[in-house]
Structures are given as C-alpha cells and as structure tokens.
Image (cartoon, rainbow, N blue to C red; front, side):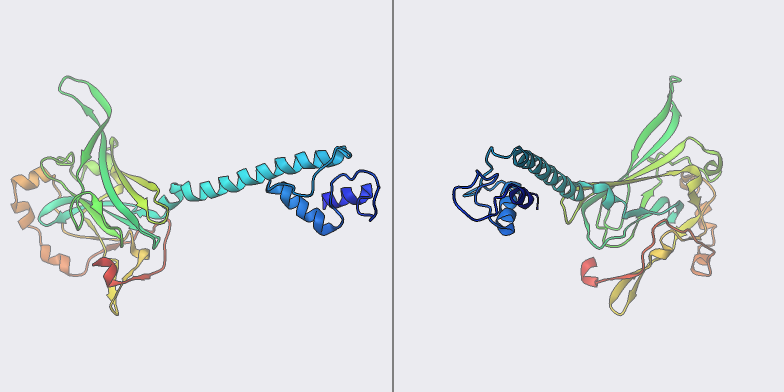
Amino acid sequence: MAWWLIAFAHGDLAPGEGGPVPCVTSIHSFSSAFLFSIEVQVTIGFGGRMVTEECPLAILILIVQNIVGLMINAIMLGCIFMKTSQAHRRAETLIFSKHAVIAVRNGRLCFMLRVGDLRKSMIISATIHMQVVRKTTSPEGEVVPLHQVDIPMENGVGGNSIFLVAPLIIYHVIDVNSPLYDLAPSDLHHHQDLEIIVILEGVVETTGITTQARTSYLADEILWGQRFVPIVTEEDGSYSVDYSKFGNTVTVPTPLCTARQLDEDRSLLDSLNLASARGPLRKRSVAIAKAKPKFSISPDALS
C-alpha cells in the first residue's frame, strides 16, 4: 500500500512516455506495487522494478521495510526456537506424589514414591536418581550442613532406568548401606535437617531434547506405615489409569522401629498382623496439583 501511495502521489501511475523519472520503475498499478513490496520484503531481487533517487521518501520506505523484515524474521525464528527448546514445559507434565511413604515391601523397610507422566508422548531413556541431604558431623568434629549421599532406587525392571508408560512406584530398600538405616518414625516429626531430593531425567520423544524434573521430600512429608493405592486397572482388555488417586495412600502394618532394629530382631516383623493388610484399610487421600481424566493404554504398550 505504501509503495502504491508513493507512486500515485508522484504521478507514476499515469500512462505516457517522457514523463518525470518515477520513484519506482515499472509500477503502473496496485498489483505491480504489491509485487515490488514482496520482492523487497523477501530480498529476491528487483528484476525490472527498482527504486530511483528521485524520491527520498521511497528510499526511506525501502530502508524501513528492510529493517521491519529483519525484525519479523528474528521474531519468528525466536518463537520457533523457544517452542522447541523449552524443556521445562515438558517437565511440568512429569508429576511426583505429594508425599513419600515408608512401609514393608518384600520383608524389608522401603522408602517409596510415585512418579507419573500426564502426556501420551513418552519420555525415552528415562532415569531417576535420589540424594539424601542432611546435616552431619564428621568424627573429627567438622560440621557439614549439606552432606549429600546418593542412594540407589529400585523399580519394576530394576536399576535407575524406568519405562514411564504408566505411573510407577519407585522404591529404595533401606538396608545397611542406606543413609536412612537409622531413621525411626519419631525422627520424621522433629528431624528438620533431612531432605530427600529426587531427579527424573529423560529425552522428549517428539523433540529429542533432554528434560529434567525435580522434587524433594522433607521429613514431615514422609509418611510412615502408608502405602500407595493401585491406580492402574484393566478394563475390557486395556489398562486404565486414574490420576485422581495418584497421591492416595492407605495405612498398612509397619514396625515402628529403624531398619537396623528390624534387621537385628526379625521377630518385630513376624509379630505384625500382616493378614490385616488384606482386609479393610484406612485410606488417606492426597490431592495433586494437576489431575487428568482416565485414559486407556493398550496392553501392547506395556509388553
């Protein structure tokens, strides 16, 4: 439109030979002015049309249009780059249970948490790591306020690698090598120097960009004697995941002692009425920040 107005004001649209030098050559209509504007915008070459030195305003419009074109290209490129490189948006769909739990699993005290993915696109090569951060004092009397200790995590396939096609319960066996070996139920109420950090890393399937999600559990966010309720059910040959129960737990019989005491006296475990775990259990509901309706997973995806 600007080029057409310049040509119209200068009288370049009037037919005839021997007139004044036009501001832009070979512009005789709105269509030719539009084509010249496209040639300037995408810098494909003027061809038979070109700006002359007759009109300073035309030179100014040419400079402004080139600058605006560069800005538009930069903005579009930035938007595309941000869309493909912002891995934290993908990390927002990776959720952790609000609380962690400690209960007996396979005859051993275990620290457990639940992790899930709200999107259907998968996280490939997913790994999970856990660290215990606590205040410690060395035998020489040195106080380490943030002593970090890596602890191994277990899952259904073993090791730190996980296949996050459905929510998983990740657990750590509290054994003699665990920094939680001397943790007692009473410590969870007044142990202010304990924090357990969980890090989930993986590659976004659609973009190939590495993403990372993190959470942590303080001492008062760890529930002793609780277990996560099942949320994956089979219906008509497909698996359904109910994310509304993602953080729900139930009370289960658990020794009120440290893992060290349990290893030294296995009768503490035998004295529990474990059969009551098959009966009615007291449920504890925990809402999560992001909930998603049920969706179906083909059995082939889990094989």
